[in-house]
Image (cartoon, rainbow, N blue to C red; front, side, top):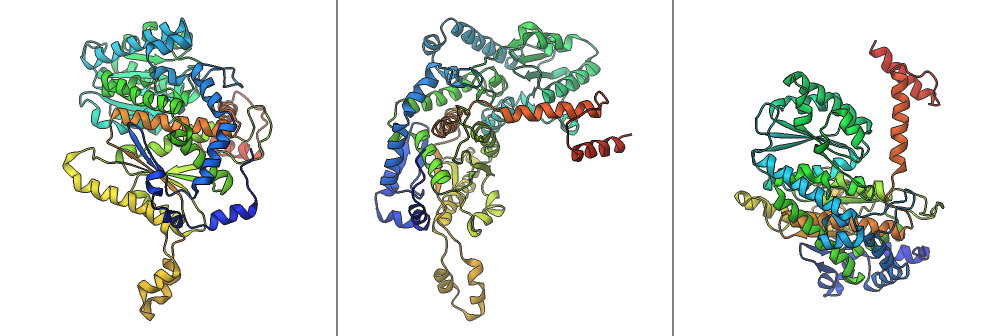
Length: 534
């Protein structure tokens, strides 16, 4: 990857003031892009038109178009697991499903029909608990990809949720998390959905068994599990052995990665919350982004441009992090979701061919909802020596008409922060502002370095379509970056190591094993835990 220019060139770009690039009066307009649901302003990035043009040419030379076509056509681009990557197919029309999947398309379409039927039956009160009561609550048990996407979408689309059906998500294996969730629920009116592709995930199964025991203790009948539980899994045998009715198990496919699975039956809890019609709109917004990604020239392609700008910041300018700053309370969980799909996808240092990479890959993702972040970590962004690029996200229209003045203040803060991070405040400006000799000692404390690059993403409003498009935008951005970094964004072997070691530790804690390759530090910690719980 020949992106790293001479040190003198990189230094000259770093020293260049972004604000000076606006001497081109057309920059604000030419460095902006709109598609149906989203508007992207990337004019505050530290990149010139010629430099961006060179990046786009490089992407073409890397045959990015061929990689995009390979993903959408069902080639096994996840080479380490010998799998296709077709989460996009789940939001595509049936004719495209048939064209790519052939006969398996019928199973996918039937699953969608079954899922929609469950949603209608629960929301209309046709499907009831073993005591004959309507469901008032849904408890979802899952972790990782079975959790993060749901968490964000449920929060983002809360205004579309029915008041008669509350959806709760349990992921943390901490017993206090289980106790907190169950304390809010009544077993006689709670529907439970277990999401686990293999039905072997340690945290999910432990939580499921605890919730199962709670429900059996409360209702005193085994019918509760067969009547009030659903599963989304590819392991029919283990799900039925758990006690879930075979007809209540929706399938997962190996060509859908967990962190991209909300478009599948994993999205059942979201559909229950917002209804089938809104869930279809959510998928439609993503499908529109898919079409844009496939068809738009790279110079006008939102995911490609965001990916290239991220590579420029990471590999040319050497910035290590990316702050994701949603100025929307409903999107407060979005940075955590991106931590998973970005760092789990591209947080690797080995190429798709197994060779050690000689360049940096995924940045560290962090963030918080505005304006809270302004009173926390953004102090560091303004006045430390570190440059931390940022993605600002805000809706043009408020989610509630009752507090429109609040939304004006929120938007003003969003736009002002991106400007402040770019412009900064020089020593001379501070001196002119203070003037008085008594306050001149404060001048170094009030200097802001500026020159921090950022994107600003505008949603027309928070709707199922715009949130679907937002999800798909970042999915495709991450895919492009992984492709150009020459790695496989669709496996996660590092996650598997942690699972394996936790099983070894648990065996020692439970007295099932005395031999271990663990360090003396970990053995000491285990013994300290055992001593405290004698």
